[in-house]
Image (cartoon, rainbow, N blue to C red; front, side, top):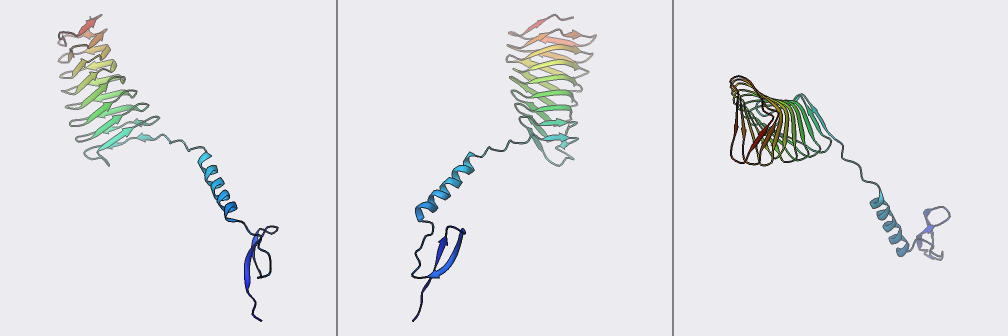
Length: 215
């Protein structure tokens, strides 16, 4: 007579085997399968998440002549020897840092709260904005380059001929040297300390601004 064969789970070997229809099926039950799948999902969820790796950008050009028009730095990210040309924009967010940056005509850098910029050169018509909670250290400004310190802090700044620095909205500038033709402007709620005015340099304090230890 015809025989019917089934496949059943062999618990001792851990394999599916072919047996006669008379053999008792001892395979995994649907409930057991569901439990196994659920256990696997839970185990996957409990695995530690992988940390986001910080990025290091060296010798990059942003904007005209560069490979991209913008760069954004976050926690742990660094950018060294960056040139920001016309149409280029660099955003230094919290935990990010930019070092040895050159900002040329039409280029701009925004240093946001918790970000830092060090050794920056702001050339003709370049722009740096230092927002509340951000810092800029050792900056040189020339030839109608502009630094707006709006709530942030600027330390060890040199303003050369036709360079401009604007302090406002709780911003502060410490240890600034204003050389011939340079200008430092202090607006409402801005504060400057230890500014040195060289022959031909100028410090202008508007209503609500303050300046101390000026020589």
